[in-house]
Length: 315
Ligand code: NCD
Image 1: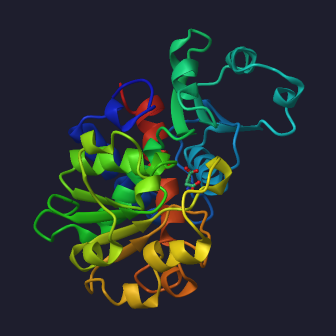
Image 2: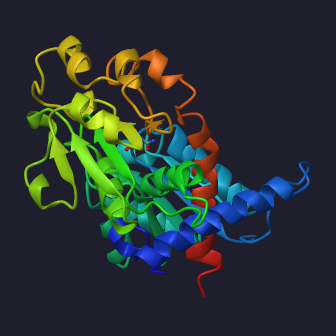
């Protein structure tokens, strides 16, 4: 495996499958471990730094839990309350981390490409994991989504295969690093993705992505195995992308009637955080087919696998 995980394109299909299989094994191992211990010694003596220049709940805590369950030392750095608010650059922050001997740096940054800069500028020898950069990519979220899909949808004869599965990703595709990473990964794993959004929330050039697009959610829902709702990212919007919140949820929100249009086995996903009542109603978010709560534990397993393969088990 590559030394860094910056994009889904850093992984071949086999490597991605290996991450998902390893995550499943690690989850099993921990389940079997004495509750009082609940730790594997794999990364003892290694240091993982969580470098967060943008807000996060799930991603940050799951990387922290993952590193701790592998017995690594964890340093949490968030830009708020650090010298970044005094004007310190990414380079100087990186040099400080290097001096502390970080083995892996998990970075989230509002600028697309920041993790790449960190990985390839020569400022640090650490492995760099992209935990979300601007509107570019969020590879571990896509791995986590695929992990959850495999748990529920893998055929009994080939557990975990997603070939031929149909996934609809709905909403603010334009600003979504989750959508980009998911399209790349699901395509590698053989699933068929349809992006569903109003024309204003589809990126220029989406025609060259390995997926279909549609403006009509009701037409897409009945045939899908998974519907993934995306948050409307108001903080990245500098214009009016749709007339009103009410109109958006009427056309693109997942509500009770639309839930009823799904096949019986179909899953509802959302990477969180949710705008309840906008892209997803409470009925859909809390329904038995929703994977939103389950995803938290799965996120820890997948991030354990990523850290383990980058730092411990890759050689
Ligand atoms: C996403 C993110 O930060 O890209 N959330 C996450 O990591 N679980 C999606 C979002 O912010 O809407």
